[in-house]
Image 1 (cartoon, rainbow, N blue to C red):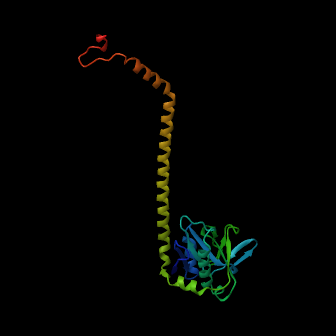
Image 2 (cartoon, rainbow, N blue to C red):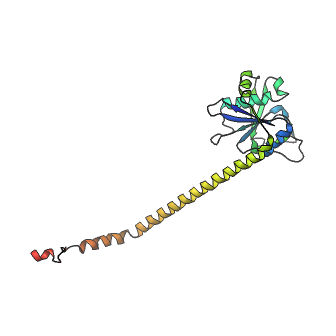
Image 3 (cartoon, rainbow, N blue to C red):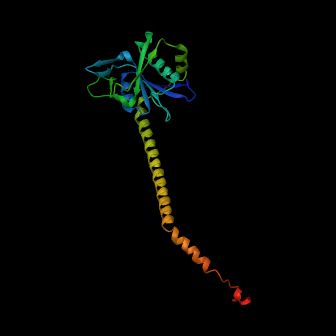
Length: 227
């Protein structure tokens, strides 16, 4: 099962989700989005021969909106994620001054040698931390009131739908870019034609003026007949 929460810490509400156990965490690792940010208590992270390993436990994810950057999030939103991470950790929930580490989902590294729910980082420097001095029950209670539950079975289809929408947007963007390029190409071509034929158009205009010295009326006689 996957638990979903809605954070109202900022005006634009955000979705936070958590796996029920290490097996659900595997599904979240597999089917996360590039727009997701992963949170975990930092005491679960150990360094072995310069490699960072995160032991199994509660994984908390924040789903970003298109205008958000993972390392420039409002402090109140990061606080909600950190509080939820602490509350869902058996170890962290019992302690004060817990440090939470977070990173983009795309920075998580998983291979066959790792235990269920265990991950590492592709780039250990692409992480941030936040200190949680103590559990804030008003924050946890607010988040718990928004909790919904869904099966992890739908994660694959949800991601495929998301990727399909992204591809459609990319195709539409490419189409618009081609149309704009064609418009600019035609504009440049027309401008080039005007520059190259400016003199000819000027001379043609002079010829039209010279040929218009005599005017005939509808009956065929010229104005000079009255001179």
